[in-house]
Length: 249
Image (cartoon, rainbow, N blue to C red; front, side):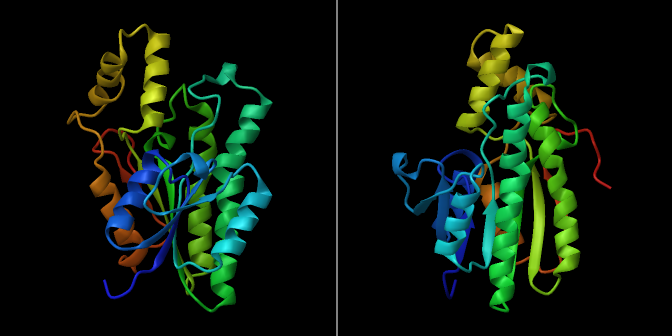
């Protein structure tokens, strides 16, 4: 790589965001990660404070970062999940809207404005979940709310074709602290004995090939979308190892 472009990766202190940020960091990109509690995490790349539930934190981040030509917008889990529909309350839905739509899309808007102001370009990858195609009972909030990301990506790609490339990744299962927590909690509700048993039943057996996603494959896919895929724009891509029965058409 002849130069080291900056890449903003949100929710990059653990889980999916960290997998992506670590891959890009190892490839030589200058990663700026974000976290709700950056001071509590050790990281080889820069970590800045960001809470999608707080508008001023989004604005302060963009003011500090200014212009970046690439961003991966990922979010953490809402506090109620895993929870079924009748277990949710008004505050859960408001938090879900802030975490998966209002916050990420406000950040997207501000980053695009910075790019246009400089007559520059930006490539954005929005991280979502394969389960938006087949909503799961214990993830009613997240699966419902973030299904709107694909619609916004299509609108943005057609509105700013000269300045913006924006795509959505629908991810299947990866071994992350958040996934382990959710599986453990659901396993307890279903009476499954032990985390390993729950992981096998709820994750591995749901996929025909019995596998989960690999961090390298995910990172390489994100890198390709951000810096190489000039003809891919406004597209939603499913990466789940054939776990999802639904077909994207």
